[in-house]
Image (cartoon, rainbow, N blue to C red; front, side, top):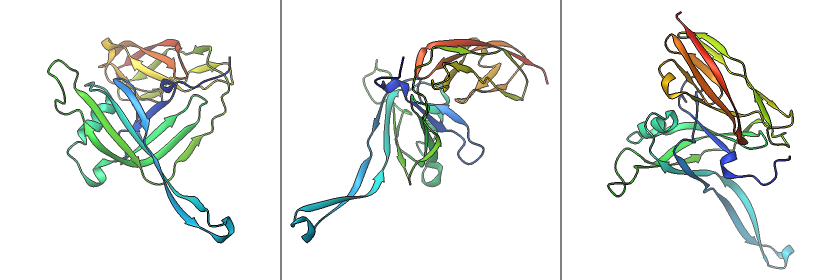
Length: 235
């Protein structure tokens, strides 16, 4: 089965929640109901003799901007980070955004967060608190990985992992067929969030001794999933 028509949820958006240090990528997905590309081109139009006086237009700059909307979800790393910047200004609003496409292409922008909502009530009493922000890119994107996948995932294989308290390891799933995107999403079981954490790239950190599980799903086809048993040992 080839990728076919792309669905919006097959595109994963990651935000760097530690932009001034070693990058720490969090998935902008839980609670998010809408992402729109609000970018606009900067153009210059002129009339030349060579065109018989007909207007000629050139694109002189590409301005990328993403509007992100949904419901406020406390405890979600990406949303918590963004809302924490609501009353910040200047460089404190700067971070990085990645877009992972169904074919495995990873695109990254530097930019700034604006229009942050989620720290106060914004609707009717019984409504969920709204979450909203806009990421305005500055400069042109960098291609982190080329998009070479041409098929949808069919199976995911993972191994159980062990890690010490304070140490890190990676889940490193294997997705088949080989021409499918291997990018996956990760979520620690509710009863294990104090035992370990996992970021958007599958890096697991031991928090306290114990056992739990992490759900792994293929972002290009979320119905393809697996579960990893995690054992955290005292350091």
